[in-house]
Length: 76
Image (cartoon, rainbow, N blue to C red):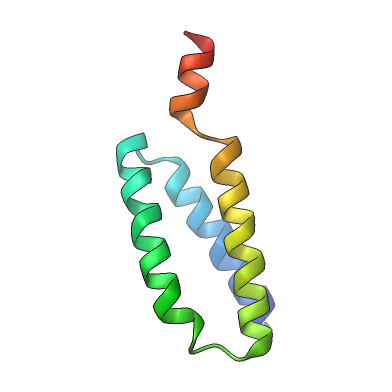
């Protein structure tokens, strides 16, 4: 599997894990993700950085569309 495929697989796994966490823990996970992503990013080659950026953007977009706190308020 190439780097893009590996990072995409990790993105999918991470999104699935985060989705089942309580909302308060989801927020903490995203804070840690941003901090650790900054450390990891500079160790990737250009292809890895491109794939990582796409995965991070996709995760951020998913986070914005699947926010339980926003959905709960809209339903309540």
